Image (cartoon, rainbow, N blue to C red):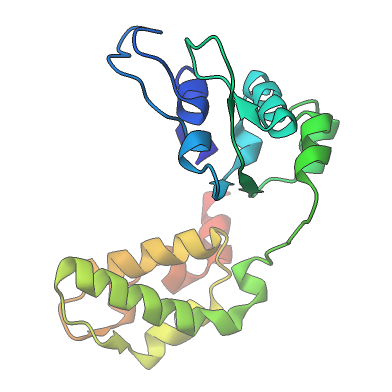
Length: 202
């Protein structure tokens, strides 16, 4: 997750470092590119990368090699790169916040994922999947959702997409005191609808 790595540690996380190359570097460490050598590296939220790191990423992609922090030589890597962003990278390029040359380099095949509100048929499957996941994690025996709860969940427009749905299911499992999740276990924005929440904020 490119948005979750601090700018100071980003180069080390991507390309690794040598012992003693900076304060706290007590041992050699391989980076994400070396760990993914011969396989696939998925960079989520690539639009969050600082411009300086974008330049280094572009070089790594073009040269098929990386240089760990503190090293004198580059190391060859063979990595299939997948990237994702919730932002419009073309717009970021126009605004000067994303390198055009990197955009063209990674934009070989583009897959557009429609927002959850445009694929409402997926909601029931996602609800059941994450219900099972969180029941395993918590040890709770929640078997499903009431008809009213499902209706509310399917009417909601999910501005936070699947990540929001995951949080809603986790919250519902934790709060549920029965074997079935009811509207009482759902957050207010789902029960009231996003439009009502927004109008109350104006």
